[in-house]
Image (cartoon, rainbow, N blue to C red; front, side):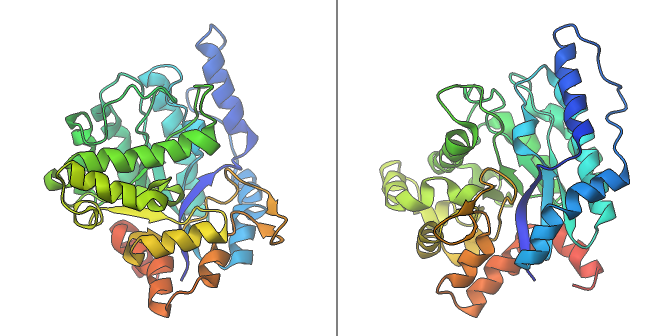
Length: 340
């Protein structure tokens, strides 16, 4: 089985974006949208999924995708907590509907209603609701709700502890994933995302979070940003900071995905990071949606890179399926209940 742990609903039907535009316009005095959320039919969902994500999954041999709201749409910087709470609820409910329509192919992951300057504990009600109503298997946590200005404490700070405690209670891993950058110095997908991935690794290295929360599992997307490609720097910094070796300090708790869009990058990731800490992902129809003229295939067709790498069958099995099931126990239970 091939499990893609990183997918976003980037092709959601137009009424979702229209509702959001009205919500944001209301912040400046416009007419607020209906509180019940956008009106989207099952047929609209089917059309948006079957001609896009599901078509590509079938072409690329991907069996299951962990599916979450569009990352750049989270936009936690916009409005206040109430703004974010309403938006998160409607986005998460839409993901739940996709999972209900395609229970064998998509499993839900939730965004959280974060807001700059607001205590993270305020997201717990929505997290609990998504566990109860949608049986989510993971969540996305934005370490920078300010949208590129980095006003929040590091991930190792007690500021975040109420969320971590709830994640552990529900056996939910967390993907550390920022949203839109409103800082003109940082392009959203080309800089802000990769900066955030690298920053998360460094924050975790500099702290002792996993001594406090040994059961917490964190996924650093997009191949870990710069971390795997400067692994010697991080190993050396761990020594200078009097931390245990990086492998001991971090690699029992953090994992990297394969959203790296060329073969040399994937090969480096596979050479540097233990294969037990790598999970297959594509983030298809995401940041890079074009074909690579050097290969004739889409940049985000990452399964091709794993298949082409010099890996043992055991390593491929771990990357494509086994680690994902181990890190996402709720996903594993879903698949087991389906006889898979």
